[in-house]
Image 1 (cartoon, helix red, strand yellow):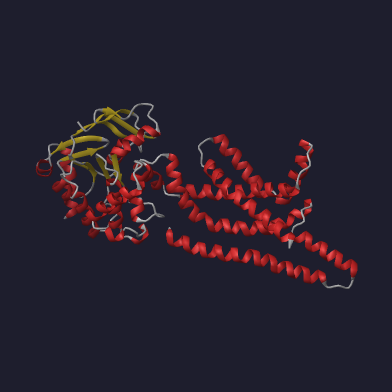
Image 2 (cartoon, helix red, strand yellow):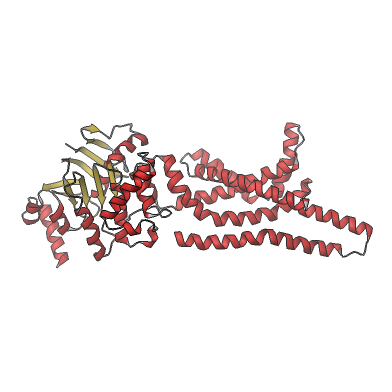
Length: 211
Length: 248
C-alpha cells in the first residue's frame, strides 16, 4: 500500500507542477525571440526522445556528482517527471495557441484588452478546454512510467511488489506469489488509469461540443 | 474634426495597399466606404485602431495624434476604448456566453462592476432583440445573431466611433437585413460609424457620405444621392456600372 502511495505521490505532484510550468513554457514557446525558441525546441526534443529512465539516472547521479550532495531519489523522480511533463504540455499549449484563429487575438485587442487580460480571459480558458483531454492522457502515461523510479531506489508500487515476491519465495520456493502479485499489480495499475482514460474520453466529447 | 487621416501609407511586403490617403470625418457622421475587393478599404479601418501598423502619415482622433512613431500597445488601448470594431467573421469568444462576451470589455478594460456592466449589456441586447439569448453560447446562434452580439460587444464599450469591416459579407441574405437594421438603428445617436461594405442599397440609404476607393487611394467623396446618380469620376462610374451588370 505504501508503494502505491509513493506512485501516486510522484505522479500527482509531477502532474500538477507540469500543468503550471507547461502553460508558462507553452506561452514562452510562442515568443518571437529566436534564441529562446531554439533552446526550448532542443530541450523539448531532448525530453521527448530520450527515455525518462536515462534522465532519471542522469539527474540522480549527475546532481550528486556535481554538487556533492546526497540526492533524494523521490525528489529526483518528481523533478524528472515534472520536466518531462512540462515540455509535453508546453508543446501542446504552444500548438493550441498557434491553432487559435488570429481573429481571437484581434477581437480581444479591438475591445481594448491588454496582453495579460487577453491571455487570462480569452486565450488560456480556450486552451485549457482543449488541452485537458491530452493532459489526462499524459497522466496515465506518467503513472505507468513511474514504475521506472525503483531503478534509482524509490520503493514504489513495482519495487514493493518485487520485495514481497522475494520474501515469499525465500519462505516457500514453490509459491505462485509471482503470478498472483503481478496479476494484482495489473489490476492496481488498471484501477489507477482506467478512470482517467474514461475521464479523457468524456472530456473529448465535451470539447467537440464547444469548438 | 472627429477623425482626420493625413498622407496615410501602408504596404504589405512590396505591394502598396494604401497610397496617400487623406480623409476627414465629422462627429456623428456615417461613412460608407465602397470599392473593389483589395482596394485597401479594410486595411484603412484596421490602421485606425492600430491592428495594422502604418508606414507613414498621421491619424488624428479628436485632434490628437494617435499614430505617434513609438506608440506602444498600451497607447493603442486608449484609442481602442474610443474606437470599437466589428469584424466580418464575428469573432465572438466561443467559451463565453453571449452576456459574458458583451460585458468582458466593460468589466476588464473600463473596470466597471459586473452588476453595472450587466445592466447596460442587457439594455443593449434588448435593443437588438437578443435578450432571450443572453446565456447561450456563440455556437448556438445563427450568423446574423452572432453578428448582432458582436455589435453589442462593441457598443457596450461606449465608443465614439465604430468601424464595421464587411460585417454582412459572410451572412446569408435573410440575415443581412437583420444586421443592417441594427446598424441603421445606430443612426442619430451621436456615434460616428465607418462602414466598409458591398451593400450598395444600404450605403445609399444610411450613409451621410460615400467614400470610394481604388488602388489604395480615395478617388471620390460624395453624398449618396450624387454618388449613385451622377458620380464625378470615371472610376466610380465604371465601378457602379460593373455592379449594376452584376445585379442584372
